[in-house]
Length: 292
Image 1: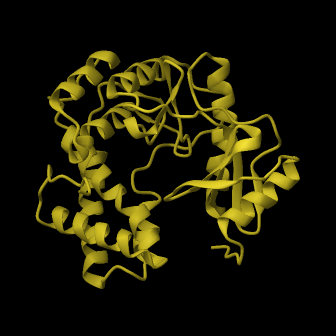
Image 2 (image 1 turned 60 degrees about the horizontal axis):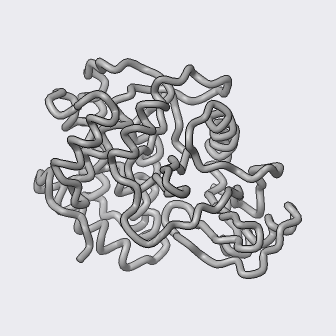
């Protein structure tokens, strides 16, 4: 893995210089797997990703331009040459969609967006085949935070779920999927919702884009919201026998960003990682992961 002495914010500032954009007032919006900064003078946001994400960011830029051209409401990249490589980071810049006070887009909005996405033809962009836990496993294997027993448990449980996944029958078939679709990846643009964060777009079973919203019961998703989501999409996964496999795959997948942050010394992330791991080891599939 390429290392860098620059902070993500300084890397974002240097990318703005290359693009000819004013970095005055650049400020952090979110730091998780990717660092996101508001660029107020360009009405844009800058995303600073890890170097190994370059190919996925290149695909995300091309794909969102294609999707926007097909009328799907997606977050759109600025019309500059991107992504940029800056001292071990991969930098992209996107239109900013200021979010109003009040509730975010609902699962129902996501259901409508996914229904339209899944009806589109495969794009003229080479996308990878969807492979669950492709990014998770190397993070687990190289972690300095996880104990040997925790590492062994995560990888063993991943093996079990991947084997179950390989034997599933997917009634919705294969096609273009977002890969990380859940209501938290939607944004308001006026009265309409847009689908964001296309880093994990792939060709795969359409059910994988639906299951993440069902996994959201851990974050307060209600039965009524799940019903509205399913109605908006036009298909209900509730009674499909593969749903528990996909939601448990998602449970493990969410550990990845907390492992990365914990490895960097983030004590809050380490505490949340330990909490989620304890829940999973006890086999509790519905325990709330909302931090109170």
